[in-house]
Image (cartoon, rainbow, N blue to C red):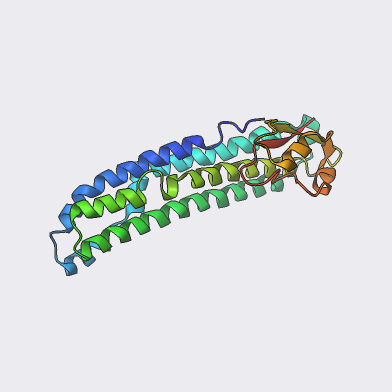
Length: 234
């Protein structure tokens, strides 16, 4: 069972924002290279690359991410019958929304840290007398598209976090219905699947308690990092 379109749109858009920011640095580096060290430090205090990324679309992107998490909560709870839904407390949904906020704070903090490190690298190059070309080459190599916030590892982490959030939402939705059974579904490829996933795919429908008692997989984390499988209601 696929997860919406997960957060692939985030990974693509953050690359675009990252490239736009770096494209703007060329002229800035040239200008800053002409001022004194004292003036440079005064100007540096006013430079805020994170704010610039917000202007370039990061704020709008995070709004879209938030909606994606909210939609996932709604999608999971839509699996419940009207009778079951009436038994779910508002506190359960509120807890998931708070979890969503933590996930979004994690994303935002990562981008903020990236912008601070980029600023430091630029200033370091200027202060140590590197040429404009050297500074920009170093920036593109170390902070360009495909690094930090747009690296393949970060992309995997983000999508994995979303999958775990989805399963956490399902666990919360069915918390009061221990009799409901779930089946492990997804790609059945003996060459690429983990051994634990191959075993879980052969399991009959199980309750949440039975799933967690298996020992080698669990309900929220499934087969582990970047797992391509899900527990779905039978």
